[in-house]
Image 1: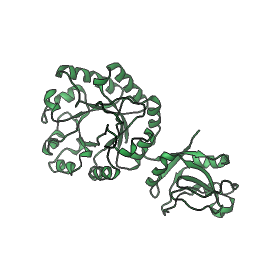
Image 2: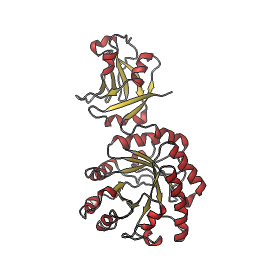
Image 3: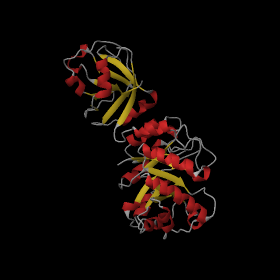
Image 4: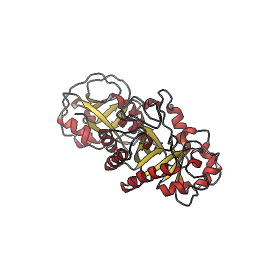
Length: 362
């Protein structure tokens, strides 16, 4: 099951604010929490006490917490690669290794007696995961998570994201990546131009970022990198079906009530015999073959336009289509609406037989 998650940074906030945010996210079905020990200051006892309290609250809300750590963090809190007891005592579900230990030590960590998940950095690339796998890890305890990038223009390219993620999916290892909230104001470091994994996401709405990550079929869990996301953002993310793309549509004034029903209420899937030009959802032409679809808005077609065959389209009357490329309109297709601009590029992720949904913007 795919999951949503948040991030908290206790060194930049207060326990009460963190707990309030955790409870709010839990109310909307979020299941994971990322938190960072890389930048935490203080003595060992203070660190352990602070995080134990917060993790206890998170577990009561049904959420799991994973610490972001690196080799230099271990001695600071009394841990080592062959003794992870302190993390288990704090109640963590696992630790994320921002930097590697070389491969063999990571494999050993997955055999820890506490069942802690060992999450490795997907963004490192360089066949890192295959090196770990060569040392016989317990793959039930091995997961992966990309980095986030606080500095503008430093996020991953999509090409590199795919290459590195595919290495993990090839071995059926669970994956995660970060999206960035427009409302959140801080992360672990002073620089905060947003905390996303992919650079192309930095200016996009948070829901579009998440839809894209899920649509790649390379990411299982989507985490909000910065804190605190607004309740509206949490609510919007919770409404996403992580296994089915849902497009937001602006409909035209002349679009009929029946056409709106077809857009928003009918089950849609792309035909298996795919076209470069169109996504075709054909069941509506069968269901509504006796209905009338008067001609309107028969203008030329742009990528992202939503189309329904009109009365001049013979047996294709009532068929819903979405344009993938610009084309001429011969008058047989009503342009009933348009995918919102920031989601048009997600049409490229609809494959043969993929189900999808559309919701009409108010």
